[in-house]
Each structure stands twice: as C-alpha cells, then as structure tokens.
Image: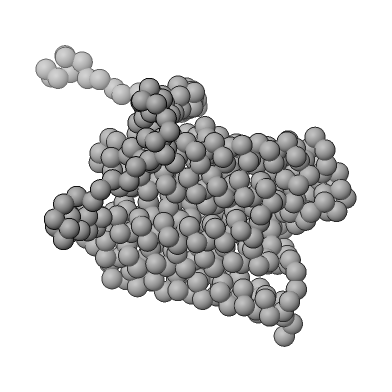
Length: 454
C-alpha cells in the first residue's frame, strides 16, 4: 500500500464522519422521526471522536512521510456530468493541523452540549446544525478547489445564522440572525467573485495554484492588478466572516444563540475561519502589497476598536466576544506582517482559551460572588491607560463611542440590513406574481341564495 492510500482514507474518514452525522440526523428530522436524545448524543460523540482521531492520525502520517503539499482526489464520479464539483482536498501541515483542531474542539462542544441542552425542545435541531458547521469547517480547512471551499464556507455561514435564531419563539434572536445573514451575504458575494475571477484568469479552480506561491502565480498570470483584486475580494470575505471593521456590529448580536454554539462559533472556530483563509492565502498576499497593507490596517483598527469596546460591555458573552475580536485583529496583523507560524500558534491557542471561557461563562457570576464573599469586599478595579494620560473630555468621548459600539449597529442597519430586507421583499413579491401567473387560482363555485333556498 502506497503512503497516499492511508492518508487519503484517514482524511476521508475525518471529513465523512460529521457529514454522515448531518445526513442521518437531518433525514430523521425531515421525516419527522427525530432520534431519542441518548441516541443522538451517542452518535454525535462517536462521529466527532472518529473525525478527531482520523485527522490527528492523518497529521502524524503526513509528518512522518516528510512530504510537502498533496492534492487528494476522490475519483471522477462527481464530475462525470457537466457542472459537477470535484472532491479534492489539499493537505499539508497547516490544513491538517487546523482541521484536527476544529474536530477536537467540536468534540468538546458536542459533549458539553449533550448535557447543557438536555430536554431542550430543539435538541436534535441543534446537533444537525452543529454537524453542518463541523462539516463546513473541515471542508474550508482541507479544500483543494474553489467549489469545495465555497460549499464549506456556505455551510459555516448558514449554520451560524440558524443557531443565532435557535430560540425562534422570541423576536430578538430572529432579528439578530437576519443581521448576521445580511453581513454573511456580502462575505459570500466577495468569495464567489474571487472564485469567478480566479477561474477566468487561471482557467482552473484549483487552490494549489492560488496558494502555491510566486512561481505558481506567475505561471497562470496571477500577478499585478489581478492578484490585488482577488486578494482584496478575499479580504472582504474574511472581514465579513471574522467581524473585522466595518462589519463588527453583528458580533454581539450573535450571542443570542445557546452558549455552546457561541463558544464554538464566535469564540473558537467560526471567527477564526477567516483568519485561516487569510493565512492560507498568504502566498497571494505576497504578490499584492496593497492588499497586504489593507489587511494589516483592518486588523489593527479592529484590535483597537474591540479592545476599547470590550471594557464597557455589561454582559459576559458580549465582553468575551469583543475580547476575542481583539485577538483576531492582532492575528490578522501578524499575517499581514508575514509572521505565519506565530499567527497559527496564536490562532490555535486563542481558540482553545476562548472555548474554555465561553463554556464557563454561565458560572462566571457565581464564581465572582464567591470570590467577593471570600475577600469580604469587591475586588479593586484596575486603572486603565486612558484614565492616566487622557483628559476627561477625551475619555468621555471614547467611552461614548465604545458604549455605542462605534455606532456600527445603525450603520449596518442602513447600509446592509435594510437594503437586504427590501430586496428580499421585492423578490418575494416577484415570486408570488410569477406563481400566480403560471398557476391560476382555482375557481370556487359559489352557491346563489336561490339554490340555498331550494
């Protein structure tokens, strides 16, 4: 057996386990035959364990082989007809490392959710969305072509928005999920535009060329203005997914979902998906100095904005969300500078740390009250830098901007959410008009008064 065969089998097992979980639980819900909780929890735990173990072994096998980047293709059956998408995975230490980390974190969240959501009416629906998210994250991590990458990108975005609206009996989660979905549409449009432009320029959708460095870029003509345009589109996609400025307003509103989903989405994995894509696109950024400068500026501005805003939040989850966004901005700056190894280690460590913080968020107030009882008084608040060097007027203005979260909510509502909702309503009216024109309404025979008398 060649070295490629066990690696291909392990990668397929790692990605296929959550995909099969999604198919199984999703089919049961569609047939209105949801599985019992004990079955759902056991099957989900088994799928996440298999995915974590398979991807970790794949990373070990790849490292032991000592080879570089490999493109794993799983047959031509998916491209036998026109418009088919080739199932290809681009594996190296970076992709396998992030995929193994994603699967391990998802396994922890799955075990925590099994108890946290016990007897919750949407228990099975939650695990369907969690399986969709894990499948999407693994596809984004290991994608070998643009088609696989875009499918994974859509899975992550759709499951994120649906989990924000998990408690759909209340209006606030649904409204906030609409805001998240509106921003994600911009991110998805930028990603799709970059994919179309890459296909037009290179004549292929293989990511091995896009992430292959300067030599591969020059062979397909991906240099100069073309590389800059594609890199800028990817940065816009990353900004929408990772809540960089000016799209940071949706992040605190996404905290409406269950605590485990907030942990895995906006604390550890989903918010880092954009950072991983940017890290993966580093060879392209090296060909576009303007895009690299733009990424660094967005990361630095986001880190400063989130660092100030997190200090005035009144609830734990929003404070943790902005604290996570501060680190995400710093990671983007590290990628723009070229510190790729430091950025990956920072991203992995931060994902694990925020996961622990979000999962323990429900106990924070209890622990704080216990510490206050033990001390006999409230802990003394640390003095901030602005309180020492800035005059009162400047501090009040900074406090107002931080308290209003940079006024990004109103800006997003006017510039993104309102046009998105208006377009959706117009399309709904067009759909209703087309349906009425194609399928005429059935004629209802009304009995006259004389007939009733008879």
